[in-house]
Length: 319
Image 1 (cartoon, helix red, strand yellow):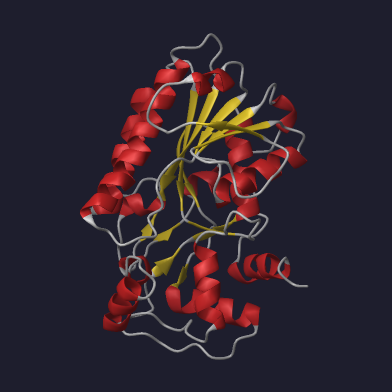
Image 2: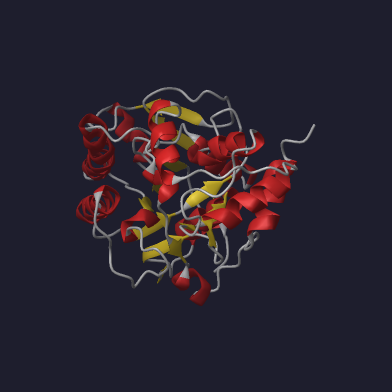
């Protein structure tokens, strides 16, 4: 499985492209000589060599013209899950994913030359939070909000994509990467916690943390766009998930923080809700997922192990 950006005859459209993942991918594609169009509700906080097209992620509009003749579509659209899971937030998390996927499908049915390939973001959280089990693409889905959202998201994708399109689903884990002005996802918060000396064991510390370096994530998306044999669902994660306590130990080592105070579950539930304004389950639960299909199909990770991945990301912040 090799990147072949020269096979991209036209721009790549990234829906939901104004955040950390979208900006990282856009910069990567630009470095490969591929033009990029970002679809997002607001203009990105960082400027770059791409075109921005506004949309609301729900209604068909003039933005659909950017898909006509595009080489590929990457859909990253969806409200952040880094929030307190109120009923309103849960509703928006689901609707933002399903509705944006459906309107992209409607847009491609209204143009003459829809992109031949659609790479669709999904979540590794679709497998739930089994405490020790290793999940692959063949594993059963879990129960709860995130698995329900993941299944609805993927169902909307399969209903919306054209029969003629090659379809690739990427069930993505935690992406660790640098801050380009659009934020750096969960790593920003984890890094802050570690620098404050609070990056120790959370709860049992045995909950799985599956992760992927942003470069490998970008390379994987390029492979999805350019490799004709890629089709169906893939776990987008490095091959070596680790327990939470080991992840934070490696993160502290990478930033040079010798102290990592532990946090009991009750402390996390209080602190997450009232101080960080987020869902404590994001820290207390996790999963071990491995990219069985990618390994079998020959995808080579540049950063297969956590210490090297963290060292590269954090080195980019050095003065």
